[in-house]
Image (cartoon, rainbow, N blue to C red; front, side):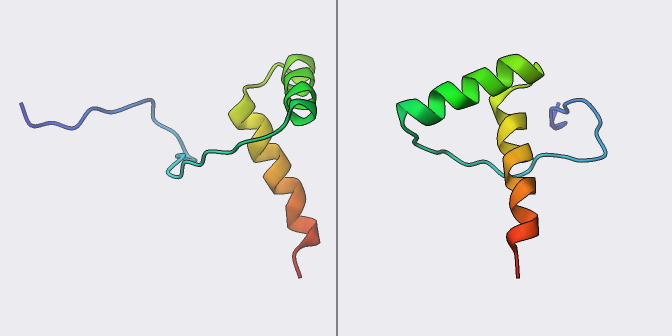
Length: 57
């Protein structure tokens, strides 16, 4: 009875969570991107974060 609830098995578990406030322009851009690429807002955010990697020193 004490077993932990499990989700789908994955090679890349999502262990971290964040909350962000953004303006109307960002909202429109995000919604258009998600619709165009058929992805969730979370996936769009992960793609955006990965694009920042090239800016790291």
